[in-house]
Image (cartoon, rainbow, N blue to C red; front, side, top):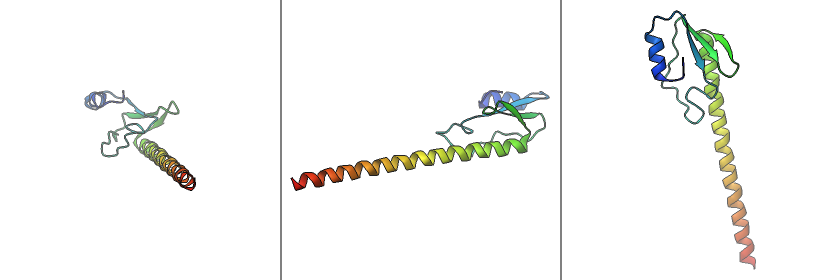
Length: 107
């Protein structure tokens, strides 16, 4: 099954005995768009969850929930680290500008 709602509906409505569901590397919807309001995991035995990162079958629904949550947590942590890095960079630039203005006043 590909990572799209169109593929999801096809799989969900099918009579397939096995459906291989990929767990994406960059979080459920990608690192930039962390969402938990749309949960497409299905708690049926025919769904077999596959880790894209590790390139292996990880098992059923319970295992998938743990992996999805870790992917979401990792993406949120990365996003927060980038936000903090941006703020620190801005603070350094403002301090540099302030020091330069003070030096120019002394001249």
